[in-house]
Length: 315
Image (cartoon, rainbow, N blue to C red):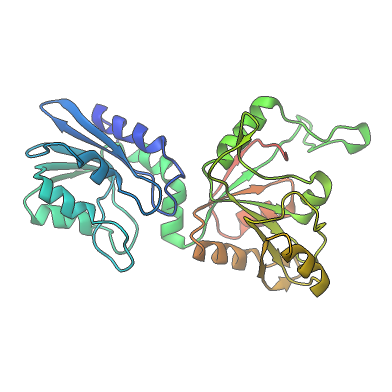
């Protein structure tokens, strides 16, 4: 269903905080009275107010309509904020328009049912297609427990990823580099293989105009045999080295940088990527960029993940 004018405002608000709320979904909400927007809210970083609470804060919402991109939450074990469905009832909202039901098991269908039971009119589906696309990583994560994988690669018109003998190792442009850093700013993790680290020595940080952003993705290095140089730029705090058949001496040197280790099974194709994705999901990694020039990214897409392909740069 195409989004209404007011739901589009909520969608735009959600898009502005994409990825910054993980593992919570990025949600937007709008309070409307007499055909006019009264207030707009978006989900705060994890542990902060949800979109509905933000939109209702400090306004008289009695008899108003609330538009929200995702079903309002309900109480569940471990929840850190007040349930939005209860806040909506207390605020006196008379109608709630919801784009999508939340696939999270403790909430799914219950938020809408609770509101209806309290006499609130609930309409579902406004802008559902746009919100499904916007929340695709979160929906994938909640439905499978696995991160949503974005395969990023650069390829020439003749199907090549570079021509080292001719001195051509970087095919992309400055706009593509800017796009890469824009994506890094909202995803939870970046995955590369040891071959990429050895060839490019990437930092894998999210930067804007050359400056590090406050929020940085987890840097995941797939290195089953322990080939990464302990002096590599990618190592240090915020790095997770996935390994199997590596020497204790190498591990000690890498651990001294502040990097963490994750030891997984090793098979004919290398480190078990399905096991890796499950482990990352348990760490609340909702979205992941994989460098597709490395076989690990192709294997990620075969491991049962949703994959999106976009251009990238190794820097």
